[in-house]
Image 1: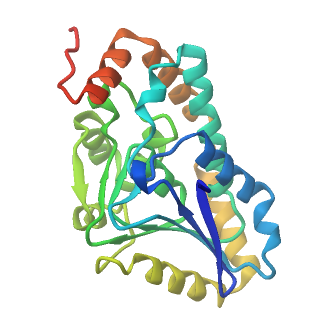
Image 2 (image 1 turned 90 degrees about the vertical axis):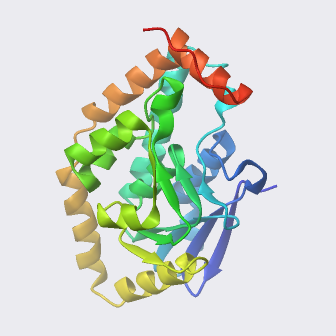
Length: 256
């Protein structure tokens, strides 16, 4: 099964994360496919207008990462996993054409981070957002500690990151995490219309806007701190207990 389905919808590339049996959770194959598309694959499109990223089915956009793999990681491999994911999301964020997330269902952990790396987020009414890593004794590893505060402000970002709470689409819109909320099942159509609207504007001006706004947030040292600490926590007793408890569907027993 292809980890990502790529379709051409009237000049718009629609990338569908295609792991419905795992609620479209991110894994190495999904990241490889994203990397390939934003590095070379997009060039196969003639007169590309923009990119829309969505998930297969209405249950989930991307419901996190493959937690079972976490138990195989030590500090070094955990940090490298984080860095590689960050680099791929940097490519998305820096893409010269609009990249819009059409969020259906759960966008949790890495899924929320993937959506935040897009330029614009449109959510179905059934969408749910959150960074629940702290429940596993971990932190977001793909830029969540940085992009969330950019979008919702310091206070709300602290609340969401420290509690691990999940919020619905309307609350995500209220705090600025998403741009629009549409009826369930309509996020993809709304995202396509948004790309078409942007494509009617000056293409060079749009590219400069993307580049200029990214310059404002370009300090990557902050992201490297996140990846180093992600790896350290991944290898810790706390991180191992959190991941094990998640897999065993029980409450983790963290030591104080």
